[in-house]
View (cartoon, helix red, strand yellow):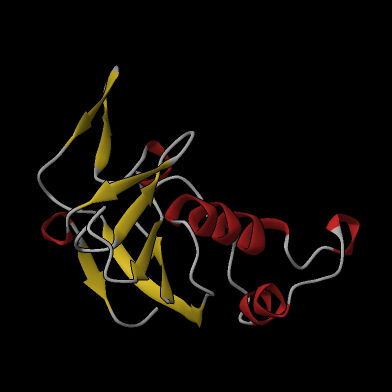
Amino acid sequence: MKVTILHNTDRDASFGLNTRLEPGKQITQPRSHQLVRVFQFEQPEDYLQHVLEDVYWRLNVGEDPDFGEPDQIALDYRALRLRSLSIGDVVQIEDGSDLCPDGYYALDRFEFKPVAASQLAITTTR
């Protein structure tokens, strides 16, 4: 399956996908945060939740020898000087799954949540 990483570049990205900070509260706005495609790789087919957990681990600590043998995909990701995945970033998984027909999953505080393509503003370059 093909995995694509999209970084959220909005000033309010740390509050979650399409969430804005206004005085005293966080609100979800209809205007989408800007997402940039930054990396793509092939992942062996597996249960969707395992894939998302693996992507998170791989791109956050997978290159660090303190966590075991460095992963080549993680090393390639870091060689591009890309940051760790953060709240508001999106992972696209192209696997033909019906769980999330568009294949987009936004990183939230504790999990990845399916998100419709219509809620995303994606650019092709950083």
